Length: 440
Image (cartoon, rainbow, N blue to C red; front, top):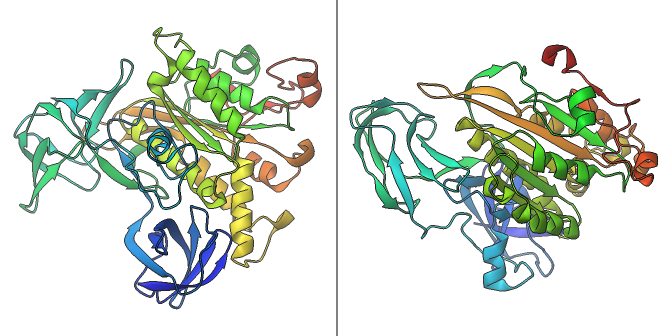
């Protein structure tokens, strides 16, 4: 157990933490605030706290959980709205009212709900990590495939069918070393680590978006990455809403990262009412929302991007095509800049940390079209579309430039077109797509 030495906004420095590791999740003070270690110096740990730190003082206890920040993956993800660290906002509202209470601990997935598990494997089958052992009809649009967690392989000795909670055993595997492992419908995965796959495929299939200017002139491939930069009021969020509604994807993961609360409210109000053009059901039946609005703690904004893409990778591993919207990566970079400044790191261009480009690349490179791990690989894809909000619409600033070095599609929005009510306000003179030759 360590103790607090210094509090600087969302950054807390604790001493006596020699037993902790980088990126461990810790509980800070008697309020049980959740935080993550982002720097170690001797026995001192710098912790970014994902909740409001006012009132904390030196001498208060800090306990490490010994595990990295992870998300819970299993039936119950679809139709949920989470904050940046996968706490369900609807449950928090029921327990604590309209504002998130400090130190509140809520399970990301409902541990009491039962799901009808239908086995797809049988006793005696040899399985490895990524293999499907059964499925659950989660919504009318999504068949949730239950996979063997990565790192486990062996022979199925028992498999059940019927109604189970996500923590009850649905199958038992005898591993190659003779150990018996019980499998449930839920698994955990650290958010900063990309989920493994067998092979990355070239992006050869177009993602039809339903927007004529995009599909005709500047198409994006399934598994591709795109940037939507533009000044304030030019319609970045509107473009992403349109893509979420009409793009040819099986699952939509929408990350509102540092966005205005009323824009996330628009998504929440619109998506349940919108009819999926392919099926006629509500669009929410295949959507996961991550809402980290601009008034929520800045450290959780940094984590929200990783939470969203880990959930997207999980559905990709099932063989689905996932459209991931990150709105906006500029606000995420501002959170990086604030934490970097409090850590007293050497600032780079415009005060952003020197590792801004590599962090953006780590995020965007987790998109792609892949063959999943498992005995029979499935083809899945994550298409990442990130909005960028350059101050004053100047795309020569660091976040825009670092993003353009990574992405292959640039949909440049133009304030002049937006003021003329020409939406989507994509300027066809400045935009481009490097997928054109492959997709033609």
